[in-house]
Amino acid sequence: MDPDFLNAFTQAAAVNQLLPENAIPQGEKRKLIKPTARNNPKLEELKLLLIDWINATLKEEHIVVKSLEEDLYDGLVLHHLLENLGSLKLDVDKIALTEKKQRQKLSVILEAVAKCLQLEESQLKWSVESILTKDLLSTLHLLVAIAKHFEPSLAMPSNVQVETITIENTSRGLKTTNAVEYITENKENLEAQPKDDAFDELFSRAPDKLDAVKKVFLQFVNQHVGKLGLNVKDIESQFADGVILLLLIGQLEGYFLNLRDFFLTPASTTEMLHNVNLALDLLTDGGLLNFSVNSEDIVNGDMKTTMRILYCLYSKYKTKET
Image 1 (cartoon, one colour):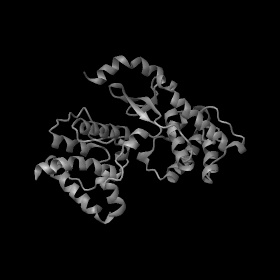
Image 2: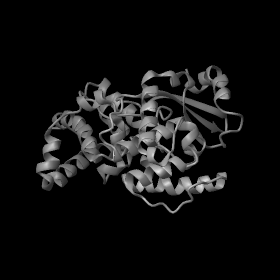
Image 3: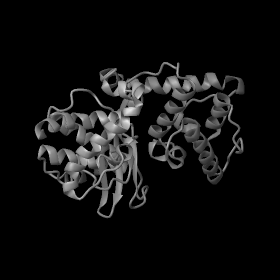
Image 4: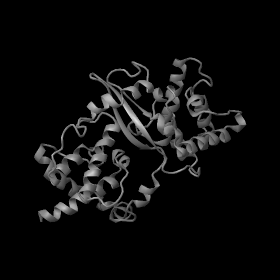
């Protein structure tokens, strides 16, 4: 059954409760934590830890945070936090009373965060708009990223995950998508990652051979996706959205991939993650993937992770071809 058709009946009431009418402009989407997921004990533990950490950090400035949603949206606490942790001097007013001033202030603050954490725009899990509208999911992602950078010894609970609902305003009405999202590291997956394998050796001890290995993989990939009129030149960037990976798996494994099952031209990180997760599921179902992979690593262009995935396919089909 078409999931969109089912959603129209099962989630319409829930969507109306989450957002007021016309809250999302047509063509745009918004991701929220499901109300039922807010009672998650590990989520509450993370919230309390972050609040205690902020209050301890800003104790001498007599700033007290009681609610992450209500006390951080205007940029005041974030401003003091960054100045205190990173000795950053930001050219913004201490207090911004109007929404316009708050938006301008948040823009400067979040730009400084991205620069400090060396994050590209596609890697950001927050925005000026989401913080300003008191979005808890974005606020948590932002604070966790700041804490990991400036206070790596802070003992945050691992594997904090929440159920989310993404609401998109399309020409046919509201479309909803459910997912599970990690806010802190999935330690189980990290522990299951292959350790000190051939790719670790390649990157750390034989970087001069890296280009030769990449060339072999590119020849292998193009031998198959070339049949679709595609040409891959860069492993780091062209696999990030999951499209080439899905098409390659389809060619090798003989899958027919319905265009409705994935995003041929993904327009957001969420859509890229959907594609990559689908590809990893296909590899797992086919018995080609025997280790855990963080799909975000592929979306973020982590070459070592991407090459490990390609090797799963190469090792099986290169043997068959020879």
